[in-house]
Length: 236
Image (cartoon, rainbow, N blue to C red; front, top):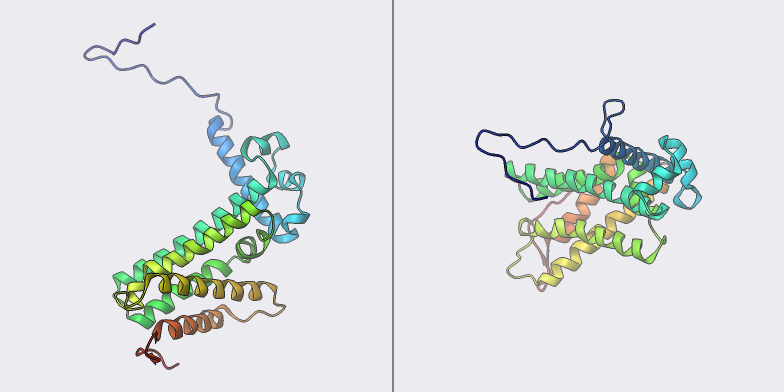
């Protein structure tokens, strides 16, 4: 039967209900809530016990869902790990981008801008060490696909720095590939600092990590390739 559009003054019929509400939530809302609980439970279990030692049953128990509900959302334990990883990466990227936006609004100079961005980077990773473990440790060596995804995230963080490179280097006289490789090296360096901090029995305060990392960034940024000189930069 062909649908006939309503005449003048008539209102279209409301869409059919998608399912019975339970506890005030639609089926779609309940499913979204279960997915959120699974991701939160996996963050807790993967970071505490390690991905290799965590079972789907333990995650479901922590989340308060059944195995059937788990497989409605995720095809495998690795797929859930990837979801946890993506949530952690998104959280970190948002904080870093926000810090750079604020630095732009305030017209901060080079050193202040770098220190603000690096501080956001350090705190985005280490304010919640669980997320840091997922991003920098638990996803390593799981599979070729996840390793490619993890490296893509590292390149994405480097791209944030590269896109802000006009504030750091004379991009007109610097080859694009030089900037790309340099930013990836810097992000790789801070990744190793994060790993050391996670594994240390007595890790240094975050303000020390931020200061030392910012000094490293500034030392590289202030270097002018080709003539052996350095741009005017911080002395501390």
